[in-house]
Length: 114
Image (cartoon, rainbow, N blue to C red):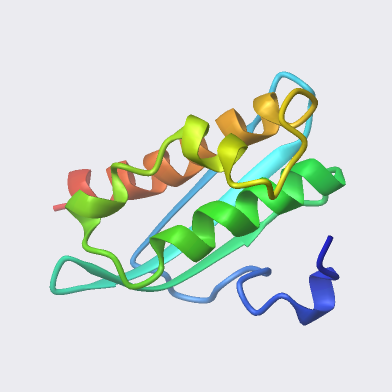
């Protein structure tokens, strides 16, 4: 698993276009920060102090989302994250749900903000 300090997508962001934070059933928290211009995700960051699977799932979602259109990024799924091999298929399933759900909530923040 990649070290947090060497992960350019890890960390909080000042002045994002949209952001979201969710606490999972496992009590771990996931945060996503997005910079969106012309309906494209130009920059994305995730932040968690959770377990290795939570970090890996956040990283996978951020990596897949960066550079995509908002509409296309909505196709990122829990199954895709689990199948990516970046988290443990069974133990990481709830972490993938947390990461994708938080990412979707950040997109909703963007779409619902006037």
